[in-house]
Image 1 (tube, rainbow, N blue to C red):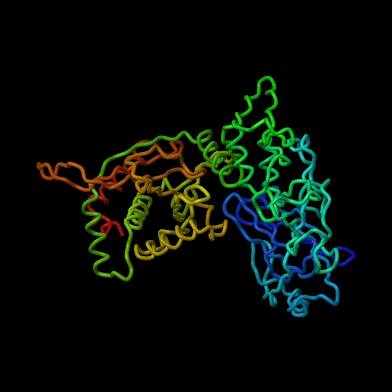
Image 2: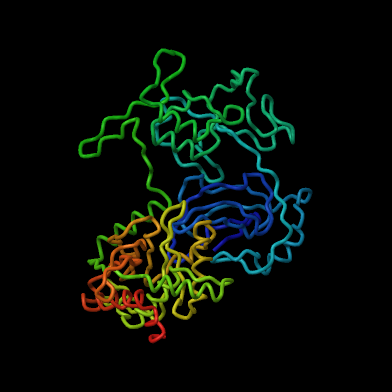
Length: 495
């Protein structure tokens, strides 16, 4: 739990951010040491295995330590930020209100803390601090972990936050950035490269980029991520005719015996971090643990599209999507074949069939493939399903879904037809037991009452865990889904 020390400072621990999440990666600090914060003020943005989350602090006062740098992973329950009581002369507006609210808890309820109402928010503009880059030969060496209360390499000198009051230090702008000379270059006094972002430092270190050889394009010559990426792209053409400027990319060290060869300078190396690492781990685990089988069938969706058109013509203010109708069909199938709404408990050596259908919907987002979950979807009407699907997928793409909405599914529906493909052999969303995939709906020749006709045809594929059922159950479920697609009236008979 969060603690108060003998000196009155409070240490805010990284809270539980969602079901089964044990750590989070710091994306960006929104405050700096010395800043005043109010109760429930967002102090840091972190990325979990499920989402990017703004973390509010339940304490008010002055920041005395930030525990961890951007890009660093912190375990749940470990110190995140330390807050000391503010001086009497510089309490932020609403701080007095906080004294009373503190007894009831903060207003932002993030899993693990917060119950009351926050005071008026006001935050001091963070001061920008610059840390000179180590020598060129150290640019590719591991950076020791920063001590508690610092951000960035511990060896880097810091510009005091309160040096000279509100006036900038000599040679510095009011933003804390060394201003360029008239020709756009950085003054000679600032010979060390200006790198603000720890993410830029890490990117340079991972790719062997010597930052002293780069000219920053940011304000005052600050080296940005784009500058490092440009150096990587131009690495094969690095010039050697300028003796005063070292090459931007260091030569890769020879690979140790048994290790993969280092990437060429022209290769694009993408670290498996954040959501990509979680996706990789989960899909790998699914392949390792689940003996999956995929079966498929073509279905005539002409009647399904006609049914949707009739529904929407009758109530245009509450349209129903094809995905919502397919979700309703899946729920009907799972009612008849509950064996697929289950998971295998390997430790307990048992199969657990879920009482409710927590329907996962695969959604492609800018952060990767996410599977938001509609809990107890069997309780929703078709219109409620349509509204919930629209709201959930929009929130997933916007990155506003809380982590709890991205866990706990029991069956997944994947509409990969939106990518213009017909079929797939999907990987099961571990630990679920089955996943239904839908291909694109296109015009194809189809035999109707002995006559050849052009119909709207789609391919349905079911990937299932062979431990929970045999082919008869899986085939029965897929055939029921296909029959309902071809004859939507069958849904009425099964309601």
